[in-house]
Image (cartoon, rainbow, N blue to C red; front, side, top):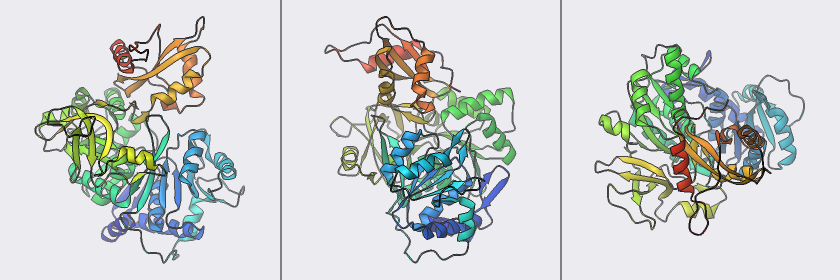
Length: 525
């Protein structure tokens, strides 16, 4: 990965790599700054294989940190800055991170105070580097990002040989069916090959300016976002806050040509564009991934925002893109399928026993290819449960391959709700709900929603005589759950559908709830 940046910086040093607010960062500047930060991190004792967490929004400092870590042969642990304190503590401890690079503050969150507490609680965590303007004096293990950049400029920091392509570069945390985080180990080669193949499939080149990447900690932001732009020589326009107005303004201001996004972003942009039209004529292509997408949304985006919207099927464990529609595909295939596998990806549809099914049959999607993860960090049992002896990753998703080789997503075996591009696992929400004194029993299901892709519906049976409102239940959840995990809808019920043995029929319950909720839920603010 470090070699990929050095190569681009050599051949196109003045080419624009990042655009953020009023600033630009060229490929040459990125190389220089990453080298400087790597030198300072090396001076702090960070060595090959050490885990370095990065907890910040989509800022240029995130990208600088990423490449500095790559140059040292260390391992990047990109974390969502919206994680609760408990989730952040868990992932830092589980990854055994020796350093964290973080924002000082973000909205009303004081990360500096939080990390000072974590330094005392986590023995592996030795250093915190903060991005901000506060004059730090609290702790000799806390450093300012800009100070390290200045101190590392021009310093020779290591005689170590560069890491090999097959070494782990990043641990990305994703949740399992229980909602417990799992660290997905991805190598340099995993991320680079999938990012390059995705860029090739989209026809990305040096004349493109890309918008819509708002979560660099996510596998799509890390891979097709940062690395795809690097490999294609394209410019990446960063946006640190989710918002349709901001994204559309960036398209108009910077004459962006390619628009990435989750369905929620495109839905809200359609509404925003109807209210305050922007000049979007520079856009030539869009790519939607991260959540279920309807054919109506694809048609509307192509009519109102960009002339061509492609669809990708993306997973953390496969370094992002598995399949994608191509510009040359027939129009019907680009609307109703997730396309064909990327180059060198092998997608099979299998039955419960792992036997391959004939075309037009519905079964579990399994994937083998250059992007398939090394495994789950420190979880060999979960790794063996997810990867077969031939290296196929069992996705847990249901799909079908048609006679032309296009993949159709049908549903999911996993009990996961994809809300606005984020995975929400029912059991975690149910555990919180079940602790409420007024709730006797609860089940959480996803319901289709135009804005969110899927909304979270908490189905609740109350204790006899209990009185509680839906808002009170949502407030109860918000105390310990991240905001995107709080139910959008609370449905009070008299009974749940049961099997003959008395177990709740989750599938039947989901069907009943989805039928009853034809209107989209109001998004939480």
